[in-house]
Amino acid sequence: MGMSLEMTRRQIAIALAVPVALTGQAAPPAAPPAAPPVDELEASRAQIRQNVERLAKVELSLTTEPAVHFRP
Amino acid sequence: MAAVPDDVFFATTVEINQRLKAREFSVVELTRAFSDRLERLGPRYNALALSIRPQALRAAKEVDGDMKRERFRGPLQGIPFAVKDLLAYKGQPTTWGAKPYAGQVFDYTAESLTRLAGTGAVLIGKLAMVELAGGGGYRMASASLTGAGLNPWDKSRWSGGSSSGSGIAVAAGLVPYALGSETSGSILWPSAYCGVTGLRPTYGLVSRHGAMPLSWSMDKIGPICRSADDCGHVLHVLAGKDGKDPASAGKNFYYTPEYSRPFKDLKIGYAAADFDQWVDAEARPDFAKALETMRGLGAQLTPVKLLDLPYAAIASTIILAEAGSVFEPLVRSGDVDLLADRKQASGLRAALEIPAKDYLRAMRLRTLVQQAFHELFAAVDVVITPTRPGGAPKVSQPLAAAPYDREGPAERGLTQHIPAGNLAGVPALSLPCGFAAGLPIGMTVMGPPFSENTLLLVGREFQKATDWHRRRPPVPAT
Image 1 (tube, each protein chain N blue to C red):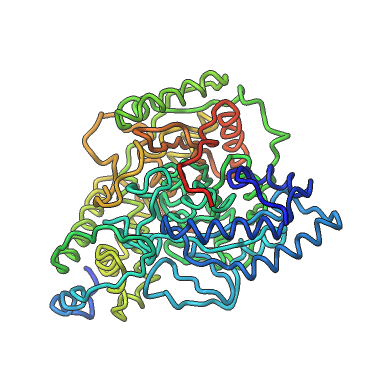
Image 2 (tube, rainbow over the protein chains, first blue to last red; image 1 turned 135 degrees about the horizontal axis):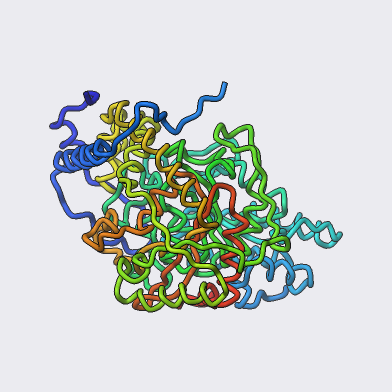
């Protein structure tokens, strides 16, 4: 189960609507296409879900350990 | 004062060092000339984060003294360089390319910079980068405190990222070499798009002390240079055990071109589909010539396949989970919304929701990736593949998340080499190998862990036979 965020969707939408000032040196390129902020978050979540679904399709042996090493 | 001739701005470190020894100009004069160029031209390409001219000139004066007394310390002595603004330099801003960290100052210097200073290299500036090295994902090239990195070959095109300033600065002759970092493509991309030579070292070979953490299990520091030979000289100084980096492999690297094995003994793997089907149509002729050049040099080219795994999905899950943990305070504070690209902010927010089971599954799949590479390099010494399918995209257009995710031939070849190679922690070298519609393209040589000397051998032989790495973009003279 996913962790809960401390901000509500409404709060996120308000926060993301604040204009962002850039300190660009040359002429700044076109701004990112406008998208509803909550949709952005949903799009990121959807991308993560899609990735996880792709991982789930690969068979893993019970004995396969994660590629991490604990060094005491 | 001796003038520094224009050709010096595009010379290799070895060439410049020889001219310093011949006293054509002093280190102070050289440092002043490169600082002028970096300060004047860097902002035109959004490549400069910070010039540190006063400190550089003081260091240069000391190196001049050493060289006058014939205290020679190697080919990097007296050579100016610059570094991605992700590495700490004591007492100066280290922004990580991101507005929330614009005022950040560390009271220590990154180990890699200390090592280079110890050999007489002269740090003259810090270079622009994609904010937070793009850890949350980004939609636009403008995802940076300094704006989009503009390609010196065509300013309407992107430089590549996240080591954008490092690729630009070397290509435009603003520094002889630069340091970048790679978690998944951030050295290879800008090297290919800007037409320069970039080396991603084996994970753990170069200390990450003083570097911005993004993904502890995947971050690497490496050089972007004018040639494979220069990459060897820089790596020789950078590599080695460091107790301050928990991931340090505890290994040294000795650049030994004089002891290289015969090139003709090398077995080089490749996938034909990479070169003749997956790349952009306008890039095919020069990629085909690059393959022919390798053949002509006597390399034993062998067709290979990489196990079909969802490499990009595995890498993305691991990077986001680790980056989410690193930047949780940024998200919780709300300052994440100061980032230039909204996708970064939403990506880091969503990253905090990745369950441990998914991160662990990705890390278990990574074990399969390591096994796949072990089997691949049991059959061949190195593999070659296009770094990217074509030249740099337009700055004004949204970036394609993964060009190789498009519909294409059934045979995926080595097209997933960037996420796959980074998951496996293996080294890779991107070499300029031609042009597509006037934009540079690059070819990657990838080998097993700690095979950097073999990669550099391939790079040197290729660059002896071609002059792509000597081509200059149409940058203004200073």
